[in-house]
Image 1: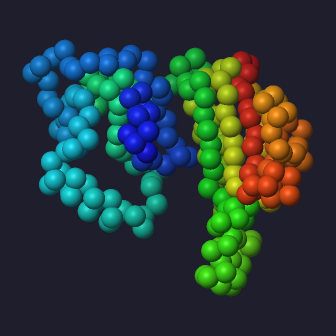
Image 2: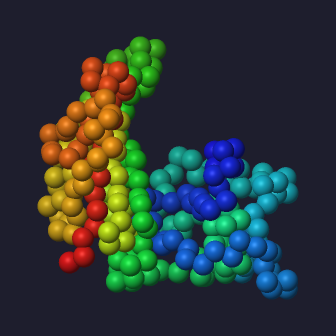
Length: 250
């Protein structure tokens, strides 16, 4: 998608566990081929030292090897201790010319407050019960499947724990004064307002922000002031919950 819409020049794309991802933005943008012509060319192996410019058409054997490895890992959850996998980076992303140990360097929380992300989107996993197209699929799959996947209390409890973890980690990576948006396509309070309330109670540096542009949107206020809800009746859309936070210096 990044390459299709020409948005990827400044992007890094990782496969990682969102509850533990900890890599900060790259502050130095090289935007040009490596200065050191003798540097080792980037490949997917551990022996690589320096990242060269991304090549969209890598050798067939290399792409086949990665595809097989990815297929084997599809059924496995990404471990919080597993190193994030860099699967794409743009020419101006700051990665070109970096060494792997520099890219994956861990920063203390004190540096995150100043060098963290300006903006974070936590588009959290949810039951998708607000997605009209998703719910319509159960006409074919059967409503027993709907009961198991959407209404099952144990699954919902597991999801709300995951949602809080994703929100907490996303906020941890946000710089002071930055903005974070939490969203789901669920209509339930448990996956939306309840998660927001618990998050605010556990993070004193977090503050809800009013989304001023929403004055012109076909939506309504959520149960918590400054949160927003879209739904079929109000918005003529599928369901969507949105909450915007900032990080205070404390």
